[in-house]
Image (tube, rainbow, N blue to C red; front, side, top):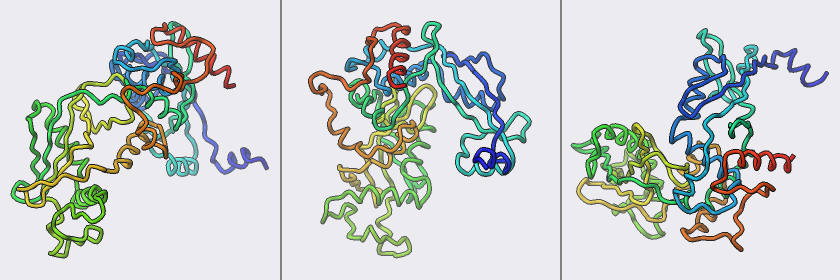
Length: 370
């Protein structure tokens, strides 16, 4: 018996309902007959306005299409951004056995149908853009090459712009639970910034201590970064001798940054407040065991876990050579022999090319790879 027939008899083959939906940069939707929950998810994912533009530019650069090194914001803005996106997707439903199996493997892809009972799986088969009336897909993403394509451009790796704020989170003592800012941000941003800082540093006692000890783990051999002589690898909260090793307060630096022109893998956006991003600065963290004196965390912090989580959220995937790759990037770095690492395509793709040229280049690239 064939595998497909066996799966069908076991009730493991889903029914598929195909749809094409067109999303617009302004958030409007056309040509669809989809459940409301699906549409809300798609519009949220695609975003609108400047964030739509940033997502497209990131995809365009990350697929290796630019033929010139992008160094300035103006060069990023010269990338034409399509006004429409067409998603070719399928809505999958099936037997309880199929639902149980698929939910276990991919729970986030499911949504509740408008009837409030049926659960269906959303499967996007193709994402196409409207290049002046011509629909075309960008080349497929490949995890390691995507990061390489992005990180070679100084305009992508440039530090985020914005105003910096030192945020102090108190976990113990008389001020336990308080969050202080220096300088004071606008009132409409304070709640979101406070919540972002709590989640970053640990919003439970266990997470707070674990994150603190992880940062101390990078201290050079022989140093006692906490200054209390305690054995941090075997810290026991119930041992009075080790109580002092738990910080009563910790500080970090957050930036309020406008919506970016491109999504940089090296920038960790913790949250949003309106149209503003709350960005984490990993080079300025400190802690206090007493509430009076402060100690900086070791400078050589291993932020790979946090950065890896960011990259995975962008769909970039596992990147083992990240540190070496980032170390090679400099503000004035030029590719060897001025040859930008990009896809080989016959059509000329330059920053000021009209959208039709982009579509021609994409289709040419697809033809070469097929």
